[in-house]
Image (cartoon, rainbow, N blue to C red; front, side, top):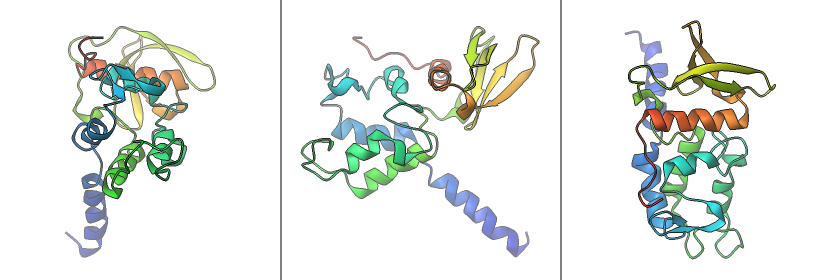
Length: 194
């Protein structure tokens, strides 16, 4: 390998290694600091947020949600976690997350805020039924969800062709629907007792 290729390769390996995984890195932070007030486990949904039921949490991840994938500055979650302790909207109310915990959550958001790793989810059998999908411009197609590769949703069109489509170009509802379809394909079930 030529020496000048080593630097880009190292940068690529470093960026992959620094990605935060929701289940491994973020969910334990939320469980420790947030489930007391925001979980099905505690039967509390303060401000309407639930962090232990992924099929509910996914509804708050999108362009208008508490988490805006790829954008920590627009994510209300980061705002409340980084407000000074004692401020009205500071969470958790009586503590401050460590800078390491904040960085993990920020990394997860910057990397797309997926609740499961989309590269590990595979559609089994025929996959989900075809349904209507709308983009930001209001145009609609009918297609079956196949997968998300990080930046694209892959749809199976009625003619059998696979169409990769930028996730960010779907309507806000379409983005949430695609993320929810990913969870369903991954076999995620609602939290017991719901």
